[in-house]
Length: 266
View 1: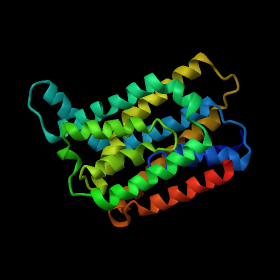
View 2: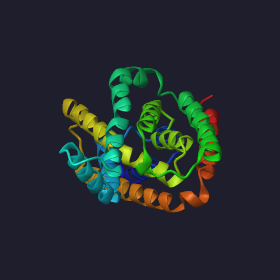
View 3: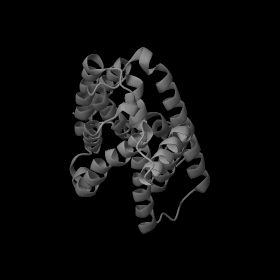
């Protein structure tokens, strides 16, 4: 893997991981357009860890606050909106984690085709547009209820289908439940932390079981840094602009991307 490939793949991973545009679709498209060889599991692990560090660093104050509130509630000091948000992140992760354990084989064998990804990229783009048009409200993430956790957590499980976009489908569900754009995005990003941690741990386990003897540590390090910086900037800019620009630019982009995939693979 040369350095151009490191830069491109790390940027793609970092920029698409948290935006509602489907990282899976982009990672399918890159090798098609470049004819590059597979980058290997070690590089995937590195870039996922880079994006995990980025999102945790970006939300470090929120992570500390909700964690402390959760510990206080568990210790018997009473529930607060912050502790409820902590429970929302924990239980909102369960459906996706269980679905991953149960259906991982089916997804790997049957649902990673370009045509499936094109279809889900387009279909969930239209659903995101509908949610942003009709469902957007004024609730913030601290008003979350158990029904919201069930719905958004269930939606996150759907993101195991490539092309759906984890951030896109969780924001869609939150918008339909009456959350503001910013609150929907913030809850989606907080939900990403345990999911990314679990995915990274799973990849590390696979890497340990099938070690790559040709690991290039410099490329892994810079790939992680590039992906992390790109993810930080993407999340920061998204949160600053989302109330003003809405989801329509991402919907249009997804529709174009889906059509390109259909054109390439039909």
